[in-house]
Image 1 (cartoon, one colour):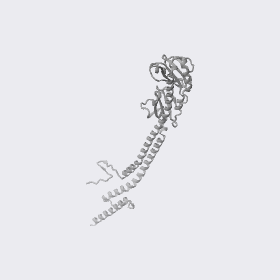
Image 2 (tube, helix red, strand yellow):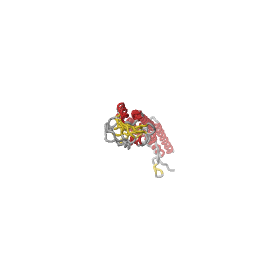
Image 3 (tube, one colour):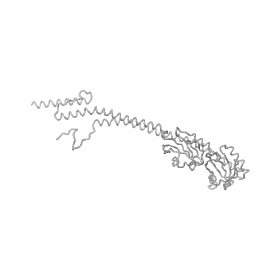
Image 4 (cartoon, one colour):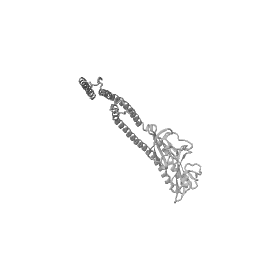
Length: 367
């Protein structure tokens, strides 16, 4: 039987050993993983908490703005319906309608004109005294006259104020069949102010679009004066089917999180904020955690290496000496006999064993 030393090859292959050094290093690293894992779980919980908090912020801002929009729209629709139900308006007589239209314009100071149309879209009376003309191609007229809608609408650029305006319409009827259409056109200054004033941090803002995706108000744009309403229908926030939930998308190269809420007349309100700012605390905490983990692992590896070397090196030396003794080499110097730990006990035991083997050899030699 041939003895094979631990350092030798067997069958031409190096024997793979999971020695003390590897064991010590593995155990220390495994122990280190426990608090590190806890740190990442804490960051994950903090991120979820930040998500919930941000969604609450979005929802609160959206509810505040939508309440302004809905109340404003409902007030205008109610006023229109009340006026359309008066005998003077139902008469479809300009002289009878005019005092009612003028009074309505004065009461609702955001409205710049009230006017009535016959079923062909021709003006009957106007509160502003402007020239009577045909509006048969206007969406607010067609909604009521041809589509039988109870409320018609059209957001457009006011020719009088050169700002976004809303024209609402309701049928004028005495029986089931309408006799005409009553229209009020109003500036959107109150709604725009609510949208523009909705700020979240440095990058958060709101914007409002109508039922076909045209921009009504935008929190990042001071002057909305233009010849036509900007088409926002392709905006990423308006492509989602699920509303009133937090969403994420790319907006002109920036990662953005947003909340989309429907408001009156089929409009949509979007409140958004850059992800970098929304999750700034979480991102910083994650960066600090990664740096801490890297520092912890590098320190652990260094300390584990030094500790494992302190344990494994003398054991390897003693193992070699024991192997030499088994081969009859009894003159090796045994290190570590002065240590107070188990390695020192092992060194002293090997020293005693070597002395015993020497003595046995001397006895055999002298016989």
